[in-house]
Image (tube, rainbow, N blue to C red; front, side, top):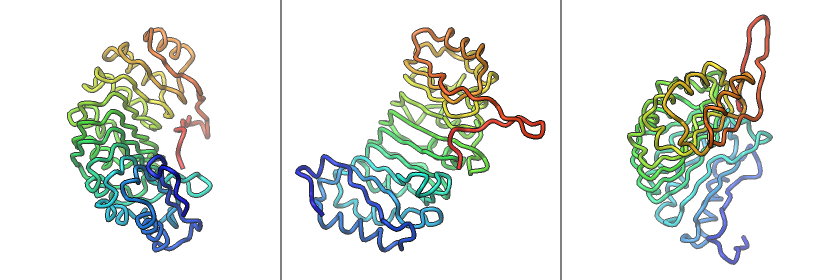
Length: 290
């Protein structure tokens, strides 16, 4: 391994070359990083393919075991795989709570994929950014995030997804997040890629957390005129700097109404969709599924 001039200025990527690799190969990569790179230089980790990601949970234990040495670690991206390597809804995880507990100074955690994903409510004083990218985020994970105490969290992204890919959360499961009780510093909230986008919009319309937000992201979902009407009928949104609704199912008239109701707000209404009809039934799809 050839070290850069400043090992702390890069993100270290751990990835096996063979998608059928045994767990020992990924564990060996973690061991090599611990042995060959000054531990205080490991500031950011990107975890790519770990071997059979479609059915074997990403090994968290080796990362947790390194916590005593990687005291400078501030950012982690779990499962940075492309769809050619593994579809997002096939990416397999386990319980990631231990990672947060092991790194109390971690500032950024991104997780791609949610099959088998688990999280227990936890207090973490330093986490500023938490992002779950998925084709279907389990309701228990959504509820756990809402039950966490994250006093420094500035940005939260929840890609809720579709029920047929494990996204079984309801708008009620977002209650903890939308109350803002454990998220006093939150300024950017994404409750997006949602099959239940209309219900999410209706819940957001009266959510206590909204007045303190700077940006609201309800994009990539199945938002229709019904959800947009509920959103506009709720509390004022004119304090926002940005409202992201791209990939939506709004009529042209409703899209124009949203823009007119929010002067000074950057409203993203790109990528308008049309419902597809099959056997007399209309279907609407999230941007990210399988």
